[in-house]
Image 1 (cartoon, helix red, strand yellow):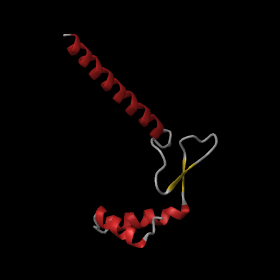
Image 2 (tube, helix red, strand yellow; image 1 turned 90 degrees about the horizontal axis):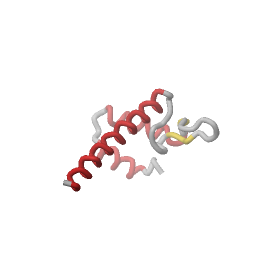
Image 3 (cartoon, helix red, strand yellow; image 1 turned 180 degrees about the horizontal axis):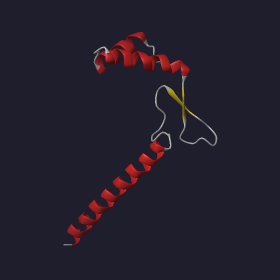
Image 4 (cartoon, helix red, strand yellow; image 1 turned 180 degrees about the vertical axis):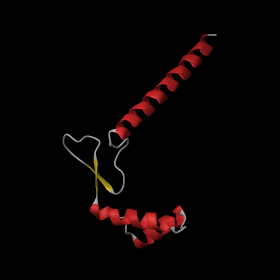
Length: 90
C-alpha cells in the first residue's frame, strides 16, 4: 500500500511540474522571448535582454535555404545530405 501511495504522489508531482513548465514557456513566448537554448541561425543577446535572440547573418542564408528546399518538397534527410555535401552549415 505504501508503494502504491508513493507512485500516486509521484504521478501528481510530474503532472504539476509539466503544467508549471508549460505555463512558464507560454509566458516567455508571450513576452517575445526564447523558451530554449541557442538555435541555429540566432545569437543570444547579452545584457538586460535575457531570453532575446538576434538573427545571425552568417547562418541566416542556410536557414533560408533549408526552408526553401523543404517548401519545394525535399525531405529532411535529403536536406541534411545536401547540406553535408556542401558543408554550408559549418
